[in-house]
Length: 270
Image (cartoon, rainbow, N blue to C red; front, side, top):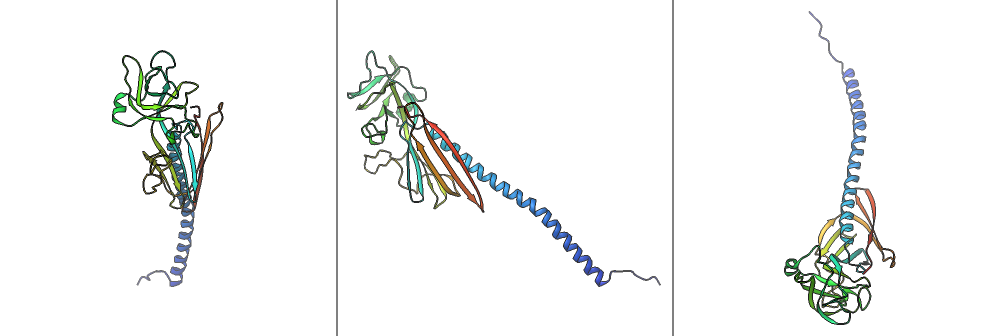
């Protein structure tokens, strides 16, 4: 009779121990690069969030009305607000229907038609005419010193702009005029980890309920979350040098932390 061969209990135990050791070694070998890939993916996602957010902020801030940028900070909340320009040009200073400071006007001629808005736009949405905004008392669009709603943009027989009767306190040294459509604010609250975009709020400081930055934190559209630090700085520059806005965001997720900084040159010649 043929004798059957098999494993002894000791051989089986040794085989199981060796198998477990090999499996643990394989797990360690595989898990390290997998964890590294997960960390790299998480960092890349955080960088994407920060880059997209800073790009959005930079694009809007470049369109800020000269000398309208305001940065405020209170507790865990930091905000940057400004008036958003959509167009601009130069007013006529000779001929008929010309611009004059300290005189009540309801229209004046421009050197050429506006590029980005037309009469149909003005009739369907609210746009504001601003001249020589210094961001100072007496020449501050937030206070209503040099800003009035546009009522029409007739193009025949002359290129003109019509607006609510208004007396502008100053003329622009370069005959410049600006067209504003709304106020924009980016508000960062590190206590909630959120950065929100606010648009279309009442920006007039001198009107009941108005403020240069929105006060209702329940409004606004979410731009980014997981924000653990934000720093906004503004250097208004000089008459010969543009202003400079510096934005820095820090985003943290699962012990991964990234900080990105962006600087934007802004027009400060009214």
